[in-house]
Length: 311
Image 1 (cartoon, rainbow, N blue to C red):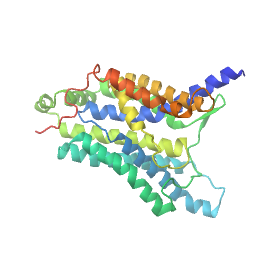
Image 2 (cartoon, rainbow, N blue to C red):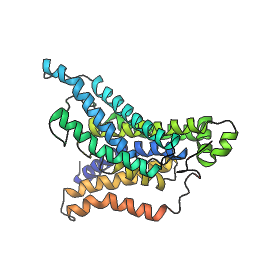
Image 3 (cartoon, rainbow, N blue to C red):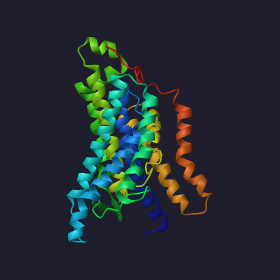
Image 4 (cartoon, rainbow, N blue to C red):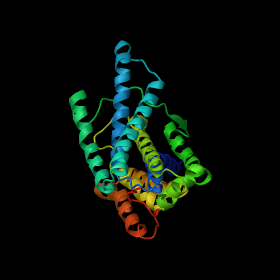
């Protein structure tokens, strides 16, 4: 195989890996914002999900490895994935209660959850592992699927399969129609018998489940441990991709692929001497700023997004 072909194949699969957490998080954010709730807390939900997944896998495998250091079990990492999702959903439930029931300011509340997510996992790491930076490495991680000499996590395939499913749910089901109505005209939706609060609770919790899944992918599907601040701003990049993709599943897919490509390209360039490493690492974040500056005024969000509803 020619060197150029090998590099392109590696870049392609790296793009898929880097796109996966962005895509999962952005799809979750799409449901939340389509219902009228801005979910700035996606970054924190990723971190909570990642920590919960890694810790649960480590706790489950510890007694098994103590008896047999070579023991492996395929179901343990999937339990970690489920725990990560549930943790994301739990955090989203707390956020939903604050902003829907008590009509707290959504940006401030989301920022508070993100700050909590930056501080709480290190405290837990200190209590469990006597370090604030990372959890123990897990031996039981998701079994990757070999393709063209590369190994791909099954969660990568799941993320891309969710795109047509989310499109169908959003635009071809009565539930999706009600969700979009709540995000555009909640008062009119209420008069038609739609429970605005229930729809918003469901959408926000769903966004937390998907963000928690993205976190689980990072800690037990991509790496094999939780690392402090391992999301590295991917929740905010996912929000930028959501705006760029105009709150549509197919647009979100294209936007996250673009961001994923630049993240993968930054990783590839770090191995060379094309430009300083600091500049290379900043590429995805510069792109995020450019997208927000160029498209935030052109994209029309759901009319009621960010506006608390009072019956």
